[in-house]
Length: 172
Image (cartoon, rainbow, N blue to C red; front, side):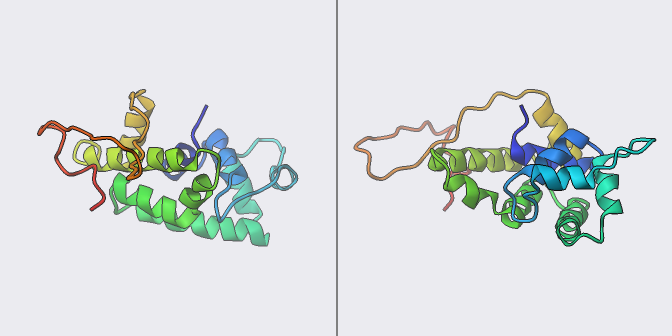
């Protein structure tokens, strides 16, 4: 199963990936949210078959499609000159996805998971400086524990080793 944010990163690298593109179009991003009927209207089943992205380009005169393509192409251009960390931050901002997941059940944990992904992108930016490299790295099946939720209302003490306390995990 593809994660929504991962699908967006995948389409930014390769807009011709139909599965990822449909996932992005059908999801709860500010610039997408296409319903099934709209997707069927856009999708052309001509011979030869075109990618969903090519079908979107063919329907550029539709206002919803034009709005999506404008936001999508802006993000794609941003990927040419920025690190995966900066791209991920820009995606969160452009899509409003953090706010969406925060409003879901267990939203605090979901936002913490997004923060963990963001921190992962920052921590491996030297090894994977391009978005394609970072997506390939994610494809390699890395195992990462869920994000930690910081809470001041718990009656607990957290211990850290000096090795762990590099400061990168703290927002301030």
